[in-house]
Image 1 (tube, helix red, strand yellow):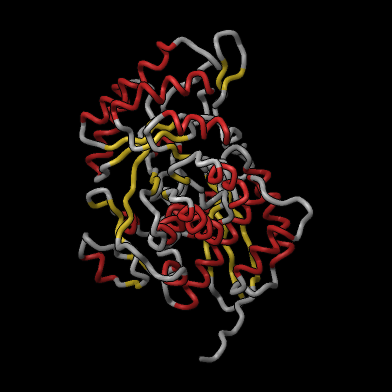
Image 2 (cartoon, one colour):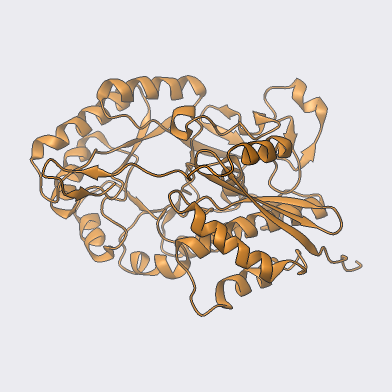
Length: 405
């Protein structure tokens, strides 16, 4: 078989889209275009700066050399790792896999060794601060085809607080379980050790799917202690970036479910490696992805190939993204159609005839399997140029002291 001609990178563009997404477009001299996502909420400008450095470094390189580009992007500077560099590298890496798949005419899952499943189980975010809000959100998700949801565990909590502040969490979990849905509970690192122990124990009778970030991701030993105290699976990983970051949690048997975010961890390349690495420790894979459609599409490609995959985060509601949902920048949203809690594997082939059958996606082409509305992306980025990037809320206690967000 003759060697493939190189696909030289000629352009690397970044688009800041409201309220908090960062899309990456990579183009080669032979006309191939790949899309990636390097969203890092609250640090958008820093990632844009990192992309300037990647552009200077990799324009002129062969886009086929994904692993070589990844290694140089990660290792060629004295400082490496961390959220900013890894998010920028993630966006570039995802786009390169998209290009490779399009060049060869196959979905990315085919390049990763082939799929081990035909569909991907998903859960939807419901948020909510009251039992009524949570029940309303869970009912909507159930109507949309989800069989599992995820909710906030608490609002802001002091280092040690009145146990009464945890009662609403239990009520919300009970309400969602009563609807027949599985529910993950995201502590979001807001709860410190003294309160996390109480909350985890109080939730045990209601069998949550998992508890997420029960403590801040700087406490591997303390999370391991908590893991030995409770039977609920412990999930963590959105604020970890590479295999090196995961190592202490795995070696301490601290987690049951790994949640790397493809837009932060180093893209498809590192997410695929993390799937194998965590499997070694009998840890399940449930990628974190509450952001844009490119990140979700990238996760799905890896999910299909990972034996230890269990469930994929999928967040599309408009209120969470303040004016743009998961489908806004897609030409065809049916690729993410949910059936009985699952999304079908993209087949890597485009056929207009498939649009006549709602049980199949009408666009599931090679690469990532999605088609980005580039005209809308460019128009939106220009229209919002100069606006301040998205900023998260900040919590303070009644005494005025800062609390974890």
